[in-house]
Length: 193
Image (cartoon, rainbow, N blue to C red; front, side, top):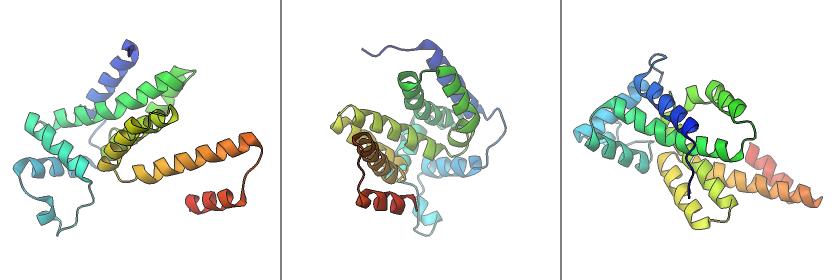
């Protein structure tokens, strides 16, 4: 049974509201997401407006259409995206962190302004990806795959990050055993560049 940490849940809701109402001002990507939301809601095809090229993955398009059908309020949209971006991250902070206050403070100062207020698609994709990695760690491979597919349908960068995490995990195993192969060092160097 999932225990709800009401303090963390309250923080997630407050931070989602801050994101929805742009309390700290309008972020740089705000107008782009607003235009994207309104175009999808109006039934226009994004491909027509962008000469056939769209760099947004299908999951994010689908999420936009669902949220627009529920409410045409852009503030509602920003709230929901921030909420579903923050829930897995705060779940993982609650699960893994020995000092939750420092972890949350660090997140709020360094990552929250970028991922939940500005680059919301990346923030949502990373939240789902982090949860996928958590499930993978506990050998829940099917659930992990589902969250990886969801994450990559929001932001494609989730796939190389997941692969990189698996690779770094294998490096950690090699270090624990006291041996590391030249092949793995080469792959690590290639992956970093």
